[in-house]
Length: 189
Image (cartoon, rainbow, N blue to C red):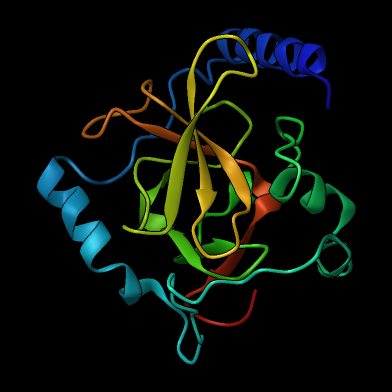
């Protein structure tokens, strides 16, 4: 997606949200920072029984050819080339079951369903992440600095952190849905 297309998409999404009332987004269930700390500490409670989660310290490095075999073209464009999927295209926007969101590139657990909220932006959004799973850097692609985050295990690009989220963190971890897989607490993804 081109930068111009991305900006146009963001403007259209914002206008749509304002006109349809989506700006009043569903809030997460935690009320204070102690609740956020509990989410971060107890995230494994939402893992599916038998799911073998890799460790963040188990680095996964593949060649571009290997990544292209492993990922869909859209997932490759986001995870390996820092692209952005179109707003509103991810089925994970409506995912409401208990479970864990893992990296589509390496299956490292990144977020839980309890961390997710409906931001009205068209991308899966979270108030916080599982500790130690992301590295951040400053991104100047849209001229204003933004905090970009990448999976620490495989280096895959996931999204950006914004300071317009709900209390108690005030953060919106805006993730490309194609960069995630959802593993429900019961059953298979």
